[in-house]
Image (cartoon, rainbow, N blue to C red; front, side):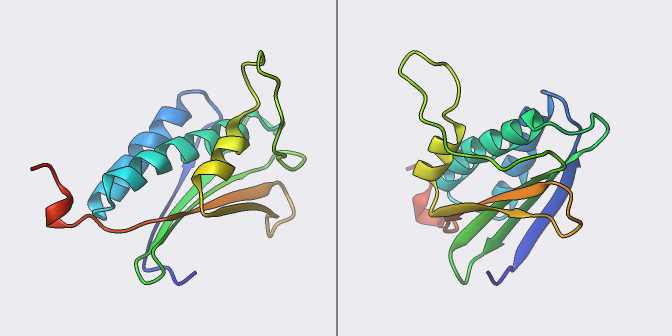
Length: 143
């Protein structure tokens, strides 16, 4: 993906990191003038990816890495979340009564494509998701 803009940051392995990731994403995409629909979807997707990374079995002192990249040329927004945890994430099929296990189902349904890859240093993985993204225009705001 030809990246024109990108931001990276790290998060502590705490529950409070999920709303922090959303706030950072909101600030970044607002600054990039990404349309509100994409921003809303990206917030949900990033929340799910960060939550999964925090649940991965990893040493408590290891942080979670986040990368947000936008290619206006390709019309794609990429969200990446890296962790030092073991194993690879899998899409679950929870029963109707189960309260969890739907995160990757949401990611799969809301994104153009997503995947997972091992990290270059061999520790952990990076889960990425691409969303179709356009910049907001003056006419797309409230009337």
